[in-house]
Length: 183
Figure 1: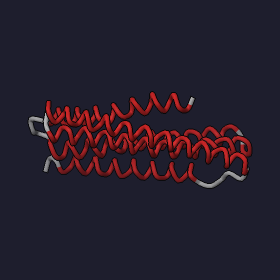
Figure 2 (figure 1 turned 180 degrees about the horizontal axis):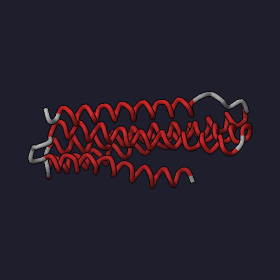
Figure 3 (figure 1 turned 90 degrees about the vertical axis):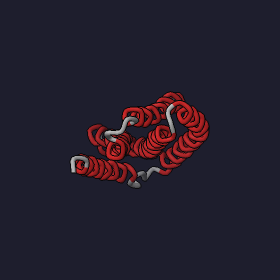
């Protein structure tokens, strides 16, 4: 009974986080761009960003496979699965964040042009919040699930550590590569 209550808390918090993420994503995904030139440039940027992300993730898949093999050898299969889960959740958050950012950029420009800086700032914040809420929600889902499944076992701390390392390693590569790409 002790583990059921925290699990319900994690599930409710994750559900709320998912709802907020979806609302923010819908908010920045609306088709508001009337200017055909801006829409064409935004489409090219979006296509380039997604192509970059696809290439980066295909390379990171090799890193994940090698790191997972090493973790299996050093710690065990469950820890490797936790590492992979953390890496995949980080990759998904990156994908959702890139999708939202490339849509929010042009939308922010159009809102600034037509409505002013305050609405544009709110649009930009909404676009950035998608990535933040996606990361927090997916981390809560993953860590909540792992806590529910493995709390009280002797490998619990190793499993949580591997999940966190998986998520952090992908976020590190994505931040460095994505930061260079967007400059």
